[in-house]
Length: 395
Ligand code: NAD
Ligand code: MG
Image (tube, rainbow, N blue to C red):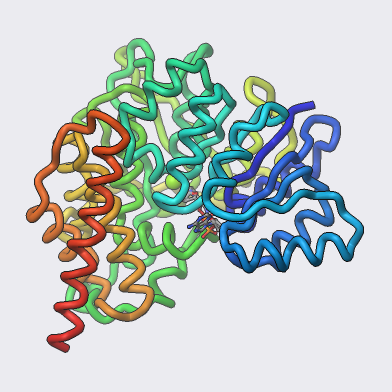
Protein backbone atom coordinates (compact mmCIF):
# COMPACT_ATOMS: atom_id res chain seq x y z
CA UNK A 1 0.00 0.00 0.00
CA UNK A 2 1.44 3.37 -1.00
CA UNK A 3 0.36 6.53 0.81
CA UNK A 4 -0.55 9.30 -1.63
CA UNK A 5 -0.72 13.07 -1.29
CA UNK A 6 -2.33 14.98 -4.16
CA UNK A 7 -1.38 18.64 -4.33
CA UNK A 8 -4.05 20.29 -6.47
CA UNK A 9 -6.57 17.44 -6.09
CA UNK A 10 -9.50 19.52 -7.33
CA UNK A 11 -7.98 20.36 -10.72
CA UNK A 12 -7.97 18.45 -13.98
CA UNK A 13 -4.88 16.34 -13.14
CA UNK A 14 -6.05 15.83 -9.54
CA UNK A 15 -9.43 14.51 -10.66
CA UNK A 16 -7.81 12.18 -13.22
CA UNK A 17 -5.40 10.91 -10.56
CA UNK A 18 -8.25 10.03 -8.20
CA UNK A 19 -10.01 8.28 -11.07
CA UNK A 20 -6.99 5.98 -11.54
CA UNK A 21 -6.50 5.53 -7.79
CA UNK A 22 -10.15 4.48 -7.32
CA UNK A 23 -9.51 1.56 -9.72
CA UNK A 24 -6.77 0.21 -7.43
CA UNK A 25 -7.90 0.33 -3.78
CA UNK A 26 -5.45 -2.48 -2.99
CA UNK A 27 -2.45 -0.36 -4.07
CA UNK A 28 -2.97 3.22 -2.97
CA UNK A 29 -4.23 4.93 0.13
CA UNK A 30 -5.10 8.61 -0.14
CA UNK A 31 -3.42 10.36 2.81
CA UNK A 32 -3.86 14.03 1.87
CA UNK A 33 -5.81 16.08 -0.67
CA UNK A 34 -5.37 19.81 -1.28
CA UNK A 35 -7.31 22.55 -3.00
CA UNK A 36 -7.15 26.32 -3.23
CA UNK A 37 -10.46 27.98 -2.39
CA UNK A 38 -13.49 26.03 -3.61
CA UNK A 39 -14.73 23.49 -1.06
CA UNK A 40 -17.38 21.66 -3.10
CA UNK A 41 -15.08 19.37 -5.11
CA UNK A 42 -12.71 18.72 -2.21
CA UNK A 43 -15.65 17.81 0.04
CA UNK A 44 -16.88 15.21 -2.46
CA UNK A 45 -13.36 13.83 -2.86
CA UNK A 46 -12.93 13.56 0.92
CA UNK A 47 -16.23 11.72 1.27
CA UNK A 48 -15.13 9.20 -1.36
CA UNK A 49 -11.43 8.75 -0.50
CA UNK A 50 -11.42 9.48 3.26
CA UNK A 51 -7.96 11.07 3.53
CA UNK A 52 -6.35 11.71 6.93
CA UNK A 53 -5.70 15.34 5.89
CA UNK A 54 -7.33 17.93 3.65
CA UNK A 55 -5.84 21.35 2.94
CA UNK A 56 -7.60 24.46 1.70
CA UNK A 57 -5.24 27.36 1.10
CA UNK A 58 -8.01 29.87 1.72
CA UNK A 59 -8.72 30.06 5.47
CA UNK A 60 -12.43 30.74 5.15
CA UNK A 61 -12.85 27.81 2.76
CA UNK A 62 -10.92 25.62 5.22
CA UNK A 63 -13.34 26.47 8.07
CA UNK A 64 -16.26 25.74 5.78
CA UNK A 65 -14.80 22.38 4.75
CA UNK A 66 -14.05 21.51 8.40
CA UNK A 67 -17.67 22.20 9.33
CA UNK A 68 -19.06 20.17 6.43
CA UNK A 69 -16.78 17.18 7.03
CA UNK A 70 -17.67 17.15 10.71
CA UNK A 71 -21.36 17.17 9.81
CA UNK A 72 -20.69 14.12 7.61
CA UNK A 73 -18.96 12.36 10.51
CA UNK A 74 -15.50 12.29 8.89
CA UNK A 75 -12.33 12.49 11.00
CA UNK A 76 -10.26 14.13 8.22
CA UNK A 77 -8.11 16.89 9.70
CA UNK A 78 -8.53 20.13 7.76
CA UNK A 79 -5.52 22.44 7.54
CA UNK A 80 -5.41 25.97 6.13
CA UNK A 81 -2.82 28.11 4.37
CA UNK A 82 0.03 27.66 1.92
CA UNK A 83 2.34 26.34 4.70
CA UNK A 84 -0.02 23.39 5.18
CA UNK A 85 0.71 22.33 1.58
CA UNK A 86 4.36 21.94 2.55
CA UNK A 87 3.42 20.04 5.73
CA UNK A 88 1.31 17.41 3.98
CA UNK A 89 3.85 16.96 1.16
CA UNK A 90 6.45 15.71 3.64
CA UNK A 91 4.30 13.61 6.00
CA UNK A 92 6.02 10.32 6.89
CA UNK A 93 2.94 8.29 5.86
CA UNK A 94 3.11 9.82 2.37
CA UNK A 95 5.15 7.78 -0.14
CA UNK A 96 4.01 9.42 -3.39
CA UNK A 97 3.25 13.10 -4.03
CA UNK A 98 1.26 14.05 -7.11
CA UNK A 99 2.38 17.64 -7.84
CA UNK A 100 -0.66 19.03 -9.68
CA UNK A 101 -0.96 22.62 -8.49
CA UNK A 102 -0.88 25.08 -11.38
CA UNK A 103 1.94 27.61 -11.58
CA UNK A 104 4.57 28.90 -9.17
CA UNK A 105 2.22 28.28 -6.21
CA UNK A 106 3.29 24.64 -6.41
CA UNK A 107 7.02 25.31 -6.03
CA UNK A 108 7.47 25.16 -2.25
CA UNK A 109 5.36 22.04 -1.55
CA UNK A 110 6.88 20.19 -4.53
CA UNK A 111 10.37 21.15 -3.41
CA UNK A 112 9.48 19.96 0.11
CA UNK A 113 8.49 16.58 -1.35
CA UNK A 114 11.83 16.47 -3.20
CA UNK A 115 13.77 17.26 -0.04
CA UNK A 116 11.82 14.62 1.88
CA UNK A 117 12.82 11.93 -0.64
CA UNK A 118 9.33 11.11 -1.91
CA UNK A 119 8.31 9.71 -5.28
CA UNK A 120 7.20 12.89 -7.03
CA UNK A 121 4.73 12.57 -9.88
CA UNK A 122 5.41 15.87 -11.60
CA UNK A 123 2.59 17.54 -13.50
CA UNK A 124 3.32 21.03 -12.13
CA UNK A 125 6.02 21.81 -14.72
CA UNK A 126 6.25 25.45 -13.58
CA UNK A 127 7.76 24.34 -10.22
CA UNK A 128 10.65 22.63 -12.01
CA UNK A 129 11.06 25.34 -14.67
CA UNK A 130 11.42 28.08 -12.05
CA UNK A 131 13.86 26.33 -9.74
CA UNK A 132 15.72 24.19 -12.34
CA UNK A 133 19.09 22.93 -11.12
CA UNK A 134 18.17 23.71 -7.48
CA UNK A 135 15.23 21.34 -7.71
CA UNK A 136 17.34 18.65 -9.39
CA UNK A 137 20.00 19.01 -6.66
CA UNK A 138 17.32 18.48 -4.00
CA UNK A 139 16.15 15.33 -5.80
CA UNK A 140 19.70 13.96 -6.04
CA UNK A 141 20.56 14.80 -2.43
CA UNK A 142 17.53 13.08 -0.91
CA UNK A 143 17.25 10.19 -3.37
CA UNK A 144 13.71 11.24 -4.30
CA UNK A 145 12.21 9.66 -7.43
CA UNK A 146 11.14 12.34 -9.88
CA UNK A 147 8.78 10.87 -12.49
CA UNK A 148 7.25 13.02 -15.24
CA UNK A 149 3.47 13.08 -15.68
CA UNK A 150 3.39 15.69 -18.45
CA UNK A 151 2.36 13.42 -21.34
CA UNK A 152 5.37 14.26 -23.53
CA UNK A 153 7.93 13.71 -20.78
CA UNK A 154 6.14 10.60 -19.62
CA UNK A 155 6.33 9.32 -23.22
CA UNK A 156 10.09 9.99 -23.31
CA UNK A 157 10.48 8.32 -19.93
CA UNK A 158 8.69 5.26 -21.37
CA UNK A 159 11.04 5.25 -24.40
CA UNK A 160 14.27 5.39 -22.35
CA UNK A 161 16.21 2.31 -21.28
CA UNK A 162 15.35 0.83 -17.84
CA UNK A 163 17.03 2.43 -14.84
CA UNK A 164 15.79 5.97 -15.48
CA UNK A 165 16.91 8.61 -12.97
CA UNK A 166 15.82 12.19 -13.53
CA UNK A 167 18.72 14.55 -14.20
CA UNK A 168 21.11 11.86 -15.45
CA UNK A 169 21.69 11.87 -19.21
CA UNK A 170 20.49 8.60 -20.75
CA UNK A 171 23.11 6.92 -22.99
CA UNK A 172 23.20 7.17 -26.80
CA UNK A 173 20.37 9.69 -27.16
CA UNK A 174 20.83 11.99 -30.14
CA UNK A 175 17.71 14.11 -29.80
CA UNK A 176 14.49 14.41 -27.86
CA UNK A 177 11.50 15.08 -30.13
CA UNK A 178 8.71 16.82 -28.23
CA UNK A 179 5.36 16.65 -29.98
CA UNK A 180 2.81 19.46 -29.80
CA UNK A 181 -0.75 19.60 -31.08
CA UNK A 182 -0.27 23.24 -32.15
CA UNK A 183 -3.36 24.22 -30.17
CA UNK A 184 -6.56 25.83 -31.47
CA UNK A 185 -4.84 28.53 -33.57
CA UNK A 186 -2.48 26.45 -35.67
CA UNK A 187 -4.07 27.61 -38.93
CA UNK A 188 -5.86 30.83 -37.86
CA UNK A 189 -4.78 33.73 -40.14
CA UNK A 190 -2.10 35.70 -38.25
CA UNK A 191 -4.06 38.96 -38.54
CA UNK A 192 -7.01 37.36 -36.67
CA UNK A 193 -4.98 36.31 -33.62
CA UNK A 194 -5.32 39.70 -31.91
CA UNK A 195 -9.09 39.20 -31.75
CA UNK A 196 -9.30 35.70 -30.29
CA UNK A 197 -11.24 35.43 -27.04
CA UNK A 198 -10.42 33.51 -23.84
CA UNK A 199 -13.25 31.08 -24.69
CA UNK A 200 -11.64 30.29 -28.06
CA UNK A 201 -8.18 30.01 -26.50
CA UNK A 202 -9.20 27.50 -23.82
CA UNK A 203 -11.10 25.27 -26.24
CA UNK A 204 -8.20 22.90 -26.89
CA UNK A 205 -8.73 20.58 -29.86
CA UNK A 206 -7.35 17.43 -28.17
CA UNK A 207 -7.01 17.77 -24.39
CA UNK A 208 -9.34 18.89 -21.60
CA UNK A 209 -7.23 20.80 -19.10
CA UNK A 210 -7.18 23.71 -16.66
CA UNK A 211 -7.51 27.23 -18.11
CA UNK A 212 -3.92 28.33 -17.64
CA UNK A 213 -2.32 25.37 -19.41
CA UNK A 214 -4.97 25.63 -22.14
CA UNK A 215 -3.96 29.23 -22.88
CA UNK A 216 -0.30 28.16 -22.69
CA UNK A 217 -1.07 25.52 -25.32
CA UNK A 218 -2.69 28.12 -27.57
CA UNK A 219 0.42 30.38 -27.39
CA UNK A 220 2.73 27.33 -27.35
CA UNK A 221 4.33 28.69 -24.17
CA UNK A 222 3.32 25.29 -22.80
CA UNK A 223 5.71 23.64 -25.27
CA UNK A 224 8.35 26.21 -24.35
CA UNK A 225 8.03 25.38 -20.65
CA UNK A 226 8.19 21.71 -21.66
CA UNK A 227 11.47 22.25 -23.51
CA UNK A 228 12.96 23.61 -20.28
CA UNK A 229 11.34 20.78 -18.30
CA UNK A 230 12.79 18.16 -20.68
CA UNK A 231 16.27 19.65 -20.61
CA UNK A 232 16.28 19.34 -16.81
CA UNK A 233 14.64 15.92 -16.51
CA UNK A 234 16.71 14.25 -19.21
CA UNK A 235 19.89 16.32 -18.91
CA UNK A 236 19.92 17.30 -22.60
CA UNK A 237 20.73 20.84 -23.80
CA UNK A 238 17.90 22.74 -25.55
CA UNK A 239 19.82 22.49 -28.85
CA UNK A 240 19.10 18.76 -28.84
CA UNK A 241 15.39 19.15 -28.20
CA UNK A 242 13.19 19.55 -31.25
CA UNK A 243 9.54 20.58 -31.22
CA UNK A 244 7.39 18.71 -33.74
CA UNK A 245 3.84 19.80 -34.43
CA UNK A 246 1.64 16.72 -34.63
CA UNK A 247 -2.02 17.79 -34.66
CA UNK A 248 -3.50 14.33 -33.96
CA UNK A 249 -1.80 14.11 -30.51
CA UNK A 250 -1.40 10.34 -30.79
CA UNK A 251 2.39 10.20 -30.58
CA UNK A 252 3.17 11.81 -27.24
CA UNK A 253 6.91 12.26 -27.93
CA UNK A 254 9.94 10.43 -29.31
CA UNK A 255 13.55 9.62 -28.52
CA UNK A 256 16.04 9.64 -31.41
CA UNK A 257 19.00 7.35 -30.62
CA UNK A 258 22.52 7.54 -32.08
CA UNK A 259 22.04 4.37 -34.12
CA UNK A 260 19.14 5.94 -36.04
CA UNK A 261 16.37 4.19 -34.09
CA UNK A 262 13.51 6.44 -33.06
CA UNK A 263 11.27 5.23 -30.23
CA UNK A 264 7.83 6.71 -29.67
CA UNK A 265 4.97 6.24 -27.23
CA UNK A 266 1.45 6.33 -28.66
CA UNK A 267 -1.95 6.40 -27.04
CA UNK A 268 -5.24 8.24 -26.93
CA UNK A 269 -4.92 11.75 -25.49
CA UNK A 270 -5.95 10.77 -21.94
CA UNK A 271 -3.89 11.96 -18.95
CA UNK A 272 -4.83 8.84 -17.00
CA UNK A 273 -2.25 6.95 -19.10
CA UNK A 274 0.83 8.87 -17.87
CA UNK A 275 -0.68 9.14 -14.38
CA UNK A 276 -1.12 5.36 -14.13
CA UNK A 277 2.41 4.80 -15.41
CA UNK A 278 3.86 7.16 -12.79
CA UNK A 279 1.81 5.61 -10.00
CA UNK A 280 2.69 2.01 -10.81
CA UNK A 281 6.16 2.31 -12.36
CA UNK A 282 7.94 0.04 -13.13
CA UNK A 283 4.72 -1.93 -13.42
CA UNK A 284 1.71 -1.13 -15.59
CA UNK A 285 -1.86 -0.98 -14.35
CA UNK A 286 -5.28 -0.29 -15.80
CA UNK A 287 -5.76 3.45 -16.30
CA UNK A 288 -9.34 3.47 -17.58
CA UNK A 289 -8.22 4.84 -20.97
CA UNK A 290 -9.68 3.40 -24.17
CA UNK A 291 -7.49 1.26 -26.40
CA UNK A 292 -5.98 3.16 -29.33
CA UNK A 293 -7.72 2.48 -32.64
CA UNK A 294 -5.14 3.07 -35.36
CA UNK A 295 -7.70 2.67 -38.14
CA UNK A 296 -9.71 5.48 -36.63
CA UNK A 297 -6.55 7.62 -36.34
CA UNK A 298 -5.73 6.66 -39.97
CA UNK A 299 -2.94 9.21 -40.42
CA UNK A 300 -0.24 11.02 -38.49
CA UNK A 301 0.96 14.46 -39.61
CA UNK A 302 4.08 16.38 -38.63
CA UNK A 303 5.30 19.92 -39.28
CA UNK A 304 7.91 22.28 -37.82
CA UNK A 305 6.69 25.07 -35.51
CA UNK A 306 6.36 28.59 -36.91
CA UNK A 307 8.16 30.90 -34.47
CA UNK A 308 6.40 33.96 -35.95
CA UNK A 309 3.01 32.51 -35.12
CA UNK A 310 4.25 31.32 -31.73
CA UNK A 311 6.69 33.95 -30.36
CA UNK A 312 6.28 32.48 -26.84
CA UNK A 313 8.05 29.34 -28.03
CA UNK A 314 11.01 31.43 -29.23
CA UNK A 315 11.13 33.29 -25.89
CA UNK A 316 11.16 30.00 -23.99
CA UNK A 317 14.02 28.59 -26.10
CA UNK A 318 15.96 31.80 -25.42
CA UNK A 319 15.32 31.49 -21.67
CA UNK A 320 16.32 27.81 -21.77
CA UNK A 321 19.63 28.74 -23.38
CA UNK A 322 20.22 31.68 -21.03
CA UNK A 323 19.61 29.57 -17.89
CA UNK A 324 20.01 31.03 -14.40
CA UNK A 325 16.91 32.96 -13.38
CA UNK A 326 15.73 33.45 -17.01
CA UNK A 327 13.20 30.58 -16.87
CA UNK A 328 11.79 31.94 -13.58
CA UNK A 329 11.40 35.41 -15.14
CA UNK A 330 9.77 33.90 -18.22
CA UNK A 331 7.34 31.84 -16.15
CA UNK A 332 6.34 34.68 -13.83
CA UNK A 333 5.72 37.12 -16.70
CA UNK A 334 3.71 34.43 -18.48
CA UNK A 335 1.53 33.76 -15.42
CA UNK A 336 0.72 37.48 -15.14
CA UNK A 337 0.09 37.78 -18.89
CA UNK A 338 -2.18 34.73 -19.08
CA UNK A 339 -4.25 35.90 -16.10
CA UNK A 340 -4.59 39.35 -17.72
CA UNK A 341 -5.70 37.78 -21.01
CA UNK A 342 -8.27 35.60 -19.22
CA UNK A 343 -9.57 38.77 -17.51
CA UNK A 344 -9.77 40.44 -20.96
CA UNK A 345 -7.23 43.10 -19.99
CA UNK A 346 -4.88 42.35 -22.89
CA UNK A 347 -5.35 40.76 -26.32
CA UNK A 348 -4.08 37.25 -27.03
CA UNK A 349 -1.15 38.68 -28.97
CA UNK A 350 -0.30 40.88 -25.97
CA UNK A 351 0.81 37.83 -23.98
CA UNK A 352 4.09 37.37 -25.83
CA UNK A 353 4.64 41.14 -25.92
CA UNK A 354 4.33 41.51 -22.16
CA UNK A 355 6.70 38.58 -21.53
CA UNK A 356 9.31 39.86 -23.99
CA UNK A 357 9.14 43.33 -22.51
CA UNK A 358 9.68 41.90 -19.01
CA UNK A 359 12.59 39.74 -20.11
CA UNK A 360 14.23 42.71 -21.83
CA UNK A 361 13.84 44.88 -18.72
CA UNK A 362 15.05 42.47 -16.03
CA UNK A 363 18.44 40.86 -16.56
CA UNK A 364 18.73 37.18 -15.66
CA UNK A 365 21.12 36.34 -12.84
CA UNK A 366 22.66 33.14 -11.50
CA UNK A 367 20.06 30.94 -9.78
CA UNK A 368 22.39 30.35 -6.87
CA UNK A 369 19.75 29.64 -4.25
CA UNK A 370 16.01 29.59 -3.70
CA UNK A 371 16.01 33.24 -2.61
CA UNK A 372 17.50 34.31 -5.96
CA UNK A 373 14.83 32.37 -7.82
CA UNK A 374 11.98 33.73 -5.71
CA UNK A 375 13.34 37.28 -6.07
CA UNK A 376 13.35 36.88 -9.86
CA UNK A 377 9.77 35.59 -9.74
CA UNK A 378 8.66 38.57 -7.64
CA UNK A 379 10.45 41.20 -9.71
CA UNK A 380 9.05 39.84 -12.99
CA UNK A 381 5.53 39.79 -11.56
CA UNK A 382 5.90 43.38 -10.31
CA UNK A 383 7.29 44.63 -13.58
CA UNK A 384 4.62 42.89 -15.67
CA UNK A 385 1.84 44.12 -13.36
CA UNK A 386 3.12 47.71 -13.63
CA UNK A 387 3.17 47.42 -17.43
CA UNK A 388 -0.40 46.18 -17.34
CA UNK A 389 -1.51 49.06 -15.14
CA UNK A 390 0.09 51.55 -17.55
CA UNK A 391 -1.60 49.79 -20.48
CA UNK A 392 -5.02 49.94 -18.73
CA UNK A 393 -4.57 53.65 -18.06
CA UNK A 394 -3.89 54.34 -21.74
CA UNK A 395 -7.03 52.45 -22.81
P1 NAD B 1 -6.29 23.15 -12.89
O1 NAD B 1 -6.44 24.62 -12.99
O2 NAD B 1 -7.38 22.28 -13.41
O3 NAD B 1 -6.04 22.75 -11.36
C1 NAD B 1 -5.12 23.44 -10.57
C2 NAD B 1 -5.12 22.93 -9.13
O4 NAD B 1 -4.22 23.78 -8.39
C3 NAD B 1 -6.48 23.02 -8.43
O5 NAD B 1 -6.59 21.93 -7.54
C4 NAD B 1 -6.40 24.33 -7.65
O6 NAD B 1 -7.20 24.33 -6.49
C5 NAD B 1 -4.93 24.36 -7.28
N1 NAD B 1 -4.42 25.71 -7.09
C6 NAD B 1 -4.57 26.77 -7.92
N2 NAD B 1 -3.97 27.87 -7.40
C7 NAD B 1 -3.44 27.49 -6.22
C8 NAD B 1 -2.71 28.18 -5.22
N3 NAD B 1 -2.39 29.47 -5.33
N4 NAD B 1 -2.31 27.48 -4.14
C9 NAD B 1 -2.62 26.16 -4.02
N5 NAD B 1 -3.32 25.46 -4.92
C10 NAD B 1 -3.72 26.12 -6.02
O7 NAD B 1 -4.90 22.78 -13.60
P2 NAD B 1 -4.48 21.41 -14.30
O8 NAD B 1 -4.86 21.44 -15.72
O9 NAD B 1 -4.86 20.26 -13.46
O10 NAD B 1 -2.89 21.56 -14.29
C11 NAD B 1 -2.13 21.37 -13.12
C12 NAD B 1 -0.66 21.33 -13.48
O11 NAD B 1 -0.42 20.19 -14.30
C13 NAD B 1 -0.19 22.54 -14.29
O12 NAD B 1 1.13 22.85 -13.92
C14 NAD B 1 -0.21 22.04 -15.71
O13 NAD B 1 0.73 22.69 -16.53
C15 NAD B 1 0.16 20.57 -15.53
N6 NAD B 1 -0.33 19.69 -16.59
C16 NAD B 1 -1.68 19.55 -16.78
C17 NAD B 1 -2.15 18.73 -17.80
C18 NAD B 1 -3.63 18.52 -18.00
O14 NAD B 1 -4.02 17.70 -18.84
N7 NAD B 1 -4.51 19.18 -17.28
C19 NAD B 1 -1.24 18.07 -18.63
C20 NAD B 1 0.12 18.24 -18.40
C21 NAD B 1 0.56 19.05 -17.38
MG1 MG C 1 2.36 18.33 -22.00
